[in-house]
Length: 234
Ligand code: SAH
Image (cartoon, rainbow, N blue to C red):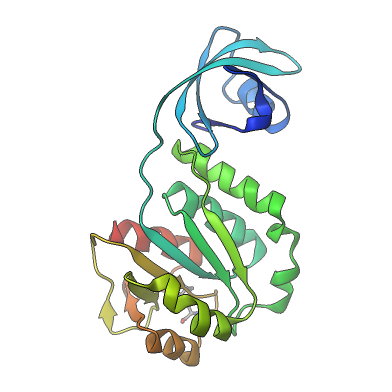
């Protein structure tokens, strides 16, 4: 936790917060902070700064000063075939820490139906994973996540207007084209499930202007592919 993310409910006055639970435990056991110490804080959706610990026992109290903006986002929208629940947590946290602000979780032929019933898709868990990503990266702006349980209607009816004006890429280990490097503008990046997109799904994406691109012959895990692709693009 490189930054403690604060929410409106944490404030007991204009510049004082009181925290319990996960953040209290982390500051006690990992930071091993004491009263008087200064910790990095940021307000969800707002500015970052520092907090002076004024109390640390069964609650953590800090007086906070917010004096800087969070880092700029990267203009990349992730279209992610819904991964297995454990992988979902890691991908959401790491995409968030890389600066992604828009994530569409979408069905695909090789996504197991049961994944859509996972408690990992609850609002609470998705908020927690994004919070962990922001705390890691010292950022405060939560990415938006939306869920699309049907691939074709999403790709045919919704994606064309979302992709409007972006460079649209679908990551595919077997694609002929190489993924571009260090691009300037907005990118829409589709990542397949663990079994990959099927040919028909790649074709549907190509019909609306996506280009299939590869970053090499090695087939990477979803979370590794997301990080490698984003690192290469920006
Ligand atoms: N078993 C599948 C691979 C799935 S890997 C197959 O052989 O086709 C999961 C996803 O990660 C892929 O759908 C793709 O979006 C991305 N990915 C993994 N390795 C990649 C690579 N070398 N180049 C581009 N995308 C890759």
